[in-house]
Image 1 (cartoon, rainbow, N blue to C red):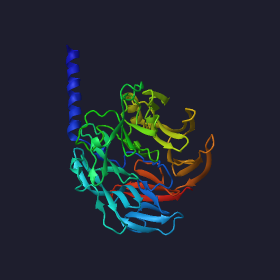
Image 2: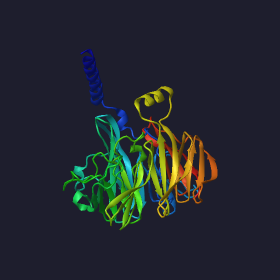
Image 3: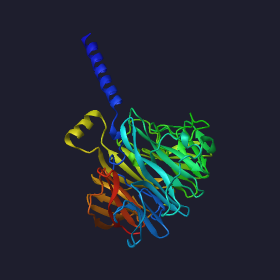
Image 4: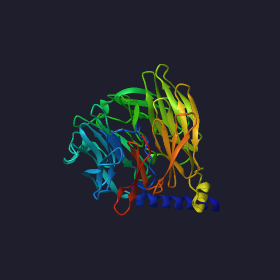
Length: 451
């Protein structure tokens, strides 16, 4: 009897603490700027888009305040002729093409269940001297969008603008990226997309949803766990998922599943985040945290190509055009006792990062480089990658079967830090840090690493 009463008391106390946490919320869940170090692996060194940087018509565009005003600056590839293009308090993404300058800019401070957060909107400038236009303001269907906190976007060659908004679930604090699209001055609804695949029971991996659903619009593809629940009026893809985007026209993942929204622990539950690496008329290559997967259209069957142990997660991928690079993070066990001991003795959850190369022709996956503790991959292109360790930046070539150290660069600042972000453009690496006082990302260093 005494044991039963004790069990009831423990249950009631636990419930009380849980409910108290639910009621109070946590500002931590709204903080996207200092939760995790952000490394950007863009498809091309001269891409006209990025988080903070872009290249267009021989000029490198980047966020800075080096001439006094915070905004987007540009310079020549040798670092000369620096000039302010337009002022902006802060940006999350940037694209420049023949139509003008697109960017996600800070708009205001909002407030939700967990407290205050920074709101970002999608703007366009016809020229650097023109006034910014809010692209989602009063267009058809925008009233159905569930968030004004936009994370990133992609402009297709047809002019369709795909954008993702951050959704924070109140009770759990879980974040998700929901995808929408703007085309011909209206937000596209669910029926606009064509169903390419909708199969169940495809994969046997216990950590991944076996259903495979892919929808497409003008060559841009999204992958879902299933399409159940969507209706004629829906303008956003995603429930508790991070929806990526793949462009078949250029054979690239253009909006990846950002590492900042992925799990930082041992896989113990079904993963809902998958992204397309390659898509053809015959098959599709898919990645998720624990494996590379392939689906064959002719046989309607799926298979696991390469899998990783539960403590090792794929956090980023890069397609060189021939091989596919897999960047993984290996974590310590997330059991309660181990987590308590780590917090007690200040032991990091992350053990190491590792780089693998997958050869689609041979179906073989080889380990290229395993990093030491507190080192991190920060950059990759078709022929090289960069590793940061403290204030050291090490550039490696990946042209040969084994990586070769090309050179070391000493920085003025420590690169890998939770408040830091990295982006690249035109052979330059840009390091940003979130300033708590000004409440914005600020450029603290830029370094040439070679083209």
